[in-house]
Image (cartoon, rainbow, N blue to C red; front, side, top):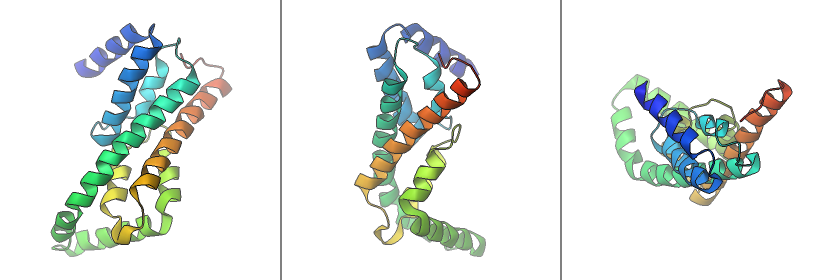
Length: 169
């Protein structure tokens, strides 16, 4: 809990400088995509000086860069994951289900899942990169899908707050 309070205080201290805030928000979005199990929307609630369009683009760019790292890592470890999962009937069944889901939904499924506000991105991105059998998805479109979902997600959060009559920042 101290970490989150420290992060919030740090972000508040950067709020007056849109450029510096955008750099830190980008790094945060990359980290949230690759290893932090927290929603990326928290960064939208700071820096009233930074326009929502800029925040949405920074969020999308951070998610895209993070997804490239995850996609590359997923491709390297997928064979080991498959070997481990195939040793158990239950895990093998889950693995086949994940492969089917990724192959059937591809970019549309990824986009829809990642566009849901407050969704933790890490797990779906790893699932789509690990279970990308037979090259169902390629790196360029994987990153583009993450970029667009990040922008969509920012505007969904903004629209909800606007509808409720609340200011995002």
